[in-house]
Amino acid sequence: MKPSSIIQLEQVSKRYRFRYAVRDLTFSLPAGRIIGMIGANGSGKSTTLKLMAGLIRPSRGRVYVYGQPAERRISRCVSYMSDMDPLYGFYTAAELISFYERVFPDFDTAKAREMLEFMSLQPNQRAGDLSKGNLGRLKMVLALSRTAPVVLMDEPLSGLDPLVRQSILKGLLSFVDLSRQTLIMSTHEVVEIEPLLDTAVLMADGHVLDIRDIDELREECGLTLVDWMAERLSRPSTGYFGANQA
Amino acid sequence: MGDDFRSSQPIYLQLADRICREIVRGDRKAGDKLPSVRDMAVEAGVNPNTVQRVYAELERMQVAETRRGQGTFVTEDVARLRELREELMHERIASFVRDMTEMGFRAEEIVTGVRAHMERSLDTAQGGRTE
Image (tube, rainbow over all chains, first blue to last red; front, top):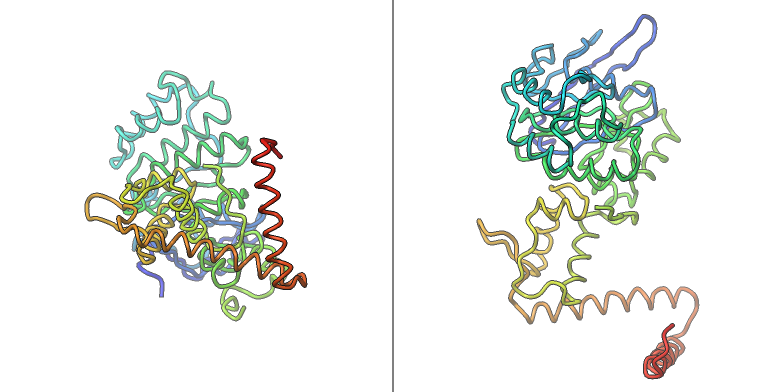
């Protein structure tokens, strides 16, 4: 049914001591799209992204990215942008770019410089001195300058003011290459992100409730993303596989 | 950026509709090149895949044509664009009439009302007053 899936999860659970962060996830995601992971805090979005990035191992089940098991070395195919601030603050933007260039063979330095200028960032400014908004922009530059087939972004918009969010989304649309890349991001800014998404994955309590294409939701059900979330979350007992009955 | 797609219609149809209005208004003329998929995506704040769908829809409507290696253009078929203008008018009128009928207005009332409104706004325009 789905054209060439780039991500595949088979009965994946991740448990921390006695608590399941995600439980029994089975789904696949198609290539060449912008996909949003949506859901409340603690619903398992970040854990799912980290599993896809090979940063954590599932307690049970298998994760495949680009046909390969998602282990630590999957970082060759996955560009991951954390919701934390993992950048070394003493590096300038230009130094970070040459650092990334050395670490990742697929890093496109020319693209990074172009994006840096597009985002009006100064190459000589130290990451530690950047405002929250400019740090968000710099993280986006570094994540999108890799030509990796999968780009994962954990909450790229959180904590940023509306103008910064707009400029980051504009940068994203200008530089993502959907003919070669698939972009998956988690976010709370559902209304703002909806026009950018092809597909939404709705999570709650460590489960995937449903996966739908945005224009299909609108065309067939007359629902915006927010309408759909409200509808799906008000009857959370039906799982992903029960979704088609709606 | 900053465009809203709050109505629950599919986003690609809303964007196609917007471009049709721009053509009818004369902002985009017969034979004009439409922005590249990427530029239109950034301008409208939508996914590039959606723009591709929009251009396909405009082609299906014979309002635009894609020339290989050159991009997508507003059709040079002026007759088709006149037709599009008529279609948009009828579409808007039909939705207005549906609305009025739902509220219980009869056909003659609607026509009289529209005529009176047009005359009033014509007077206003000639009197040089602004609303």
